[in-house]
Image: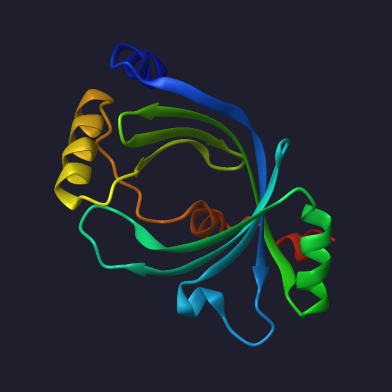
Length: 167
């Protein structure tokens, strides 16, 4: 239903695939308390390491600093992190289909253990333009429930065990 609405609105499908997100625990800092994250995302076309800063206070949206490094060698990045004392903490697996509509990126995620979610990301610096795009998308795609938590937070809340607990 969402995909049909996106096509009707003129959105272009830009990617589709499966991804695995490895979240790491800092050796001396609780990322849960500081609201930060270090994620290694693995996809068929490569990987990226992303530091996510604490969420900024914004109404109806989730915004945070993100610093990303792309790599075609995720195993090397993972080994470096482990040598520095970081430990693999959680894994989030999902299939994702991404559409682009003007300056709005729409991602349809099917997250293992959680189900389907629609993520909207505005790709503009103009706050009023971004708010207008979000409002149009929410109405046209009939998205009435906003989930403020991350997939990782939802999995932890649901009691999905850490990767280290599975080994």
